[in-house]
Length: 139
Image (cartoon, rainbow, N blue to C red; front, top):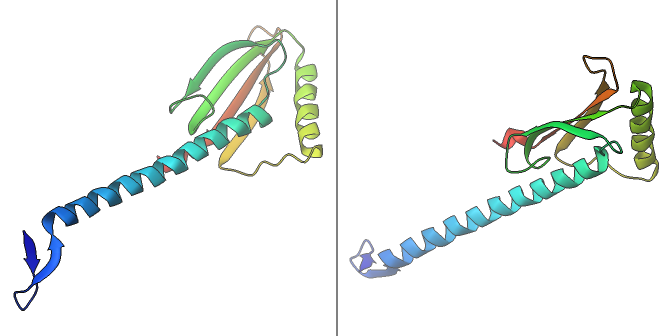
């Protein structure tokens, strides 16, 4: 079936052709959006592995994340425990982050990462809280 123009002549466009183009556009848009999301997710995980290192020999207490994987797109919180003193752990994180900056590493990207060291309720050791919010505004 062909469309007719104002004079009644065939325009050369078919219903099937129009439908095909709509499908092609939808697939293209989906592919582009998926590519952007995957690139953001990979960037977020890379950011976390660089800027939120795990303290050596620390034990995992808990981990929560809002999307597909930890430290990918969304919000992630990882809590670690070590028997080391609060000051020692804080100094290790400060030195590690400073060394990364001196090496020329950059925090450019869609992730906001933060670490914090607190004292557990029983007062023994240190709790390490690693948190990242990565492109969660997309959703």
